[in-house]
Image 1 (cartoon, helix red, strand yellow):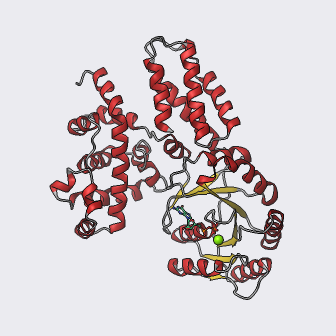
Image 2: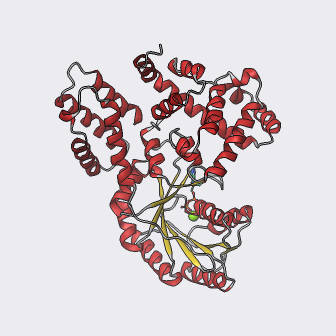
Image 3: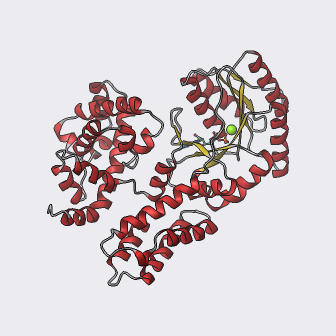
Length: 439
Ligand code: GDP
Ligand code: MG
């Protein structure tokens, strides 16, 4: 999607006459790309109007960087849609906060329940889980396994078949025990949608949650609008979690869900692992959807700092980006601060660091640098593929840097993504450098 939008914008700036007609045709291309990424058709139409009115094309001075202005307008309009300008419920310490999960079967409720419980536990809340899915055989077992792994107290029943009873009993028990975060997992499937919704309402009445969260699979596509509306009307959820944002789906459906229900997204699921949960950040979500990040902004900032970037710049302009280039960038980011602002400019990094404060972030960066520093010269100057071909190298690097194989993998994933960006940027960078008289 990002590439298509960039292409549309580039075509415009290359058009022999940069006129209103070329601008309109570019807007059409962008609209098509967004619709194909599952952003709701009506939203896309509105977006097109918004961009047209914010970018007063005919009034732009000839010297204006039209590409940047238009890209920014698209970006801002999308951010505005996923940002419902509403603060979600904030659990309070010293009280029982009941959080109920709803969503279709397979959306990722059970997985996300545990992730969220761990998230609160790590922030000092006394946290537990209640399994009110008596519909699917094995549902309780799944929750139990997750809970044990994360060391979270849980409640469920293998004999009681009424989910309302299980939910009520579990919540009562944990309230008595003064748990602060009580997360109730529910079933998503029923032979009939009406029956599912009726069950949801009954559980909701029984446990009186402070917050109901709808879990939505990122790959839901155009169905997102109708589905989230239906859930909203029945279970009036106050927050959304989008799961499987690590998958191939463009995620446009998530935007439609927010727009249709005016409900904030609070977290996103980024993998199957317990730790793969990140606080939602509209800017990085849209960056990812558009596949752009603010690479150009980053490069400009870095240039203004006069850090030694020659080698990396040269590489990027050739579409290359070695692990060493990444290490140099990480080192520079450490020098540049404030970290949160910098990380927000790098696609992927912004996702990774989005939920961290500057201190957590710099610890993470340092560990990434240790990982790079434990590599051999050959590995550092490589494109990272040698690690895929020989996974034992990852183990060695993890051991050498005092980190985990998982962190090494994460760094390499990050690197692959940045290298991909470098490839896409090749043309743009060359133009930029030319413009700045550096080539
Ligand atoms: P439920 O039916 O709504 O409870 O869904 P589950 O929690 O059982 O999840 C269904 C499947 O989706 C499982 O295989 C999960 O591992 C997977 N899953 C959940 N969240 C994510 C995510 O953020 N990323 C990925 N890749 N898989 C996920
Ligand atoms: Mg489940």
